[in-house]
Image (cartoon, rainbow, N blue to C red; front, side):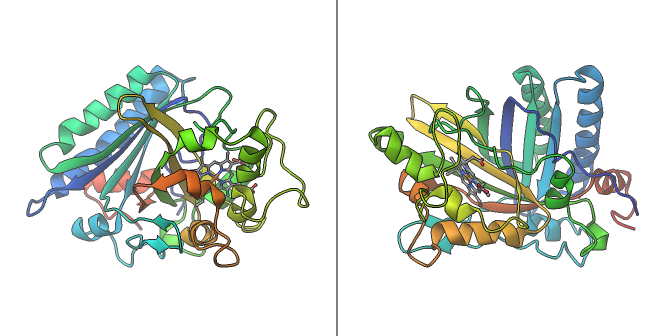
Amino acid sequence: MNAEPQNVLDYRGDNTIFLVWNFKKDLDVAAAFRRICALVINLNNSGETRFPDSGALVVMGIGYEAWLRLGLPTPLPKELVNFRPIVGAKHTAVATPGDLHFHIKGASSSICYDMAAALALILDPVAVPVEEVHGFRYWDGRSIMGFVDGTENPKGEKRAFFGLVGDDDPAYRGGSYLFVQKYIHDLKAFKALPVEEQEKVFGRSKDYDIEMTDDEKPSNSHIALANVGDDLKIIRDNLPFGNMSTNEMGTYFIAYASTFSTVKKMLDAMFIGSPAGNYDRLLDFSTAKTGSLFFVPTASFLKNVASGTPAID
Ligand code: HEM
């Protein structure tokens, strides 16, 4: 089977809307879900035709509970479970429920808005929107904390290797594990640090994004802990957001991966620490408000659901 993946490997996306919808209880949601699958395919085809250079696209992920409720194929993707909190001595990666996740992106915010509105029209009767974050590209790809975010992401062919399920789960080959967390930063405290101290939090220079040498890099810096090995990478597509009226400045962390266990290793190192207790100093300035795992099946899977044929061969 040569299933066509959803477009989880695309680089582009200056404007993004991240959405989580949860199904209402005691309703038959199967028909609405079939329509959503058809709409996701339609929106992607249309986005590519109308705005070929803008990277207008939407990726849909499905949570564990929703997978079961929708009667999607069993056995499930091998690592699809409900995300469980990771509790460190000082910081916790919380777990929050999520049935469907939409990652909408494009150079123009108009197309992102229209895609979100089209999805909401079908979802509204059967589901509740529980999260909505509008992310934007901040200067030269910086997080709202001022450091360039994404530099060490896999490039070229390696993106498919690290981002898509391979032969170890043949029924779901071409799918992807999607993990998201909404972080709120204490920017006031972070900005109060001298720049050299801020750089030690990340392990890179601020202006020119240069990695510290192993001798310079503190063991509790973000990149020292998040780097769990050259053979264990993920595709990060984070974008910042900011709201002056609520004073919520944050990062929507979003990762696509061939296995969830890689993401889990990174989270363990960050929250519990490596060794335990040596946790990620970035967390002293960042609080995870959400945390959910989804599976992104292939576009072929969505087409099959939409047409009422078995979702996988
Ligand atoms: C609090 C929200 C976060 C912010 C603001 C953030 C920001 C950054 C920045 C600025 C870098 C350095 C440049 C780069 O290579 O991208 C980085 C690297 C990285 N981050 Fe994060 N990050 C966050 C959360 C996470 C989480 C939750 C994970 C994993 C579950 C993660 C995994 C990584 C990895 C794997 C690298 C590359 C490490 C390397 O090989 O050098 N990050 N992050």
